[in-house]
Length: 160
Image (tube, rainbow, N blue to C red; front, side):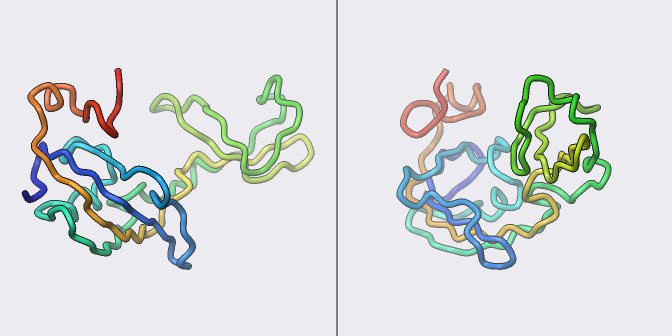
């Protein structure tokens, strides 16, 4: 069966950056399961999955615009340390949720400079080409309920 809109797809993946460093992988874990066409994986990968079938192995390079988006320099800011109430020891690499114009955004602390904390609201992979190695492990038709809810139920999917 080929992957088409509303297919329930399970796949193993390894994601590397331009330097060939592994950023994320399903190696040693269950495959990732998603509903094709529902926006649960980055658009460029979802497009590359179309028409594939169980057993297919392929590599795909997803440009930033079809991955986690371009970097937006306005999301890189300096904030006073007192903005982090109740956090005694702020370290680079820590992640926080903040409020942005579009609602909640995740920010990563990039540096701490005395009373100034440098934060970046871009996704850590924004502006980067995503290099995926994919192995499709299964493809099945989704149920009526899964289509209505927009995600997979049961094995490997989200639970309510």
